[in-house]
Length: 155
Image (cartoon, rainbow, N blue to C red; front, side):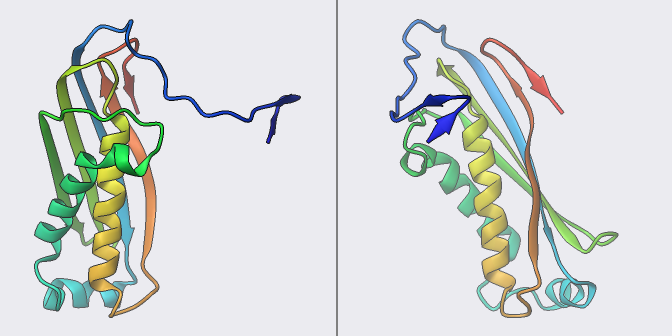
């Protein structure tokens, strides 16, 4: 593959041994958007698979814990906490999903864990509601903020 005139044909897990372990936090968000009639049905009937919000929260937490197994160059991290919020938004016929992840003993951040948690929670909502319609979309998965390390980020 070529980038800016160079050939890059290697993969490296970044060496973080010289970094300082600090409290690191990250938050990510995403949206599962439904056609209005499908959203109304989801709110009224739920899913035959069970409690949509609880199952999606558990899936997101599990995903955050296994991020390094899914992303080959991601460091495995001991997580202090993973919290997922999944809130229906009737104004736009959606579920708004957010995750907050923290670690206090790491030399690298937890933004990948937060993004993975949101992605899998959104996919779980899709899986649990796809029997009503396949016109459901997952949108706007993004990092909201991160703290700790070299730089902070807020969007």
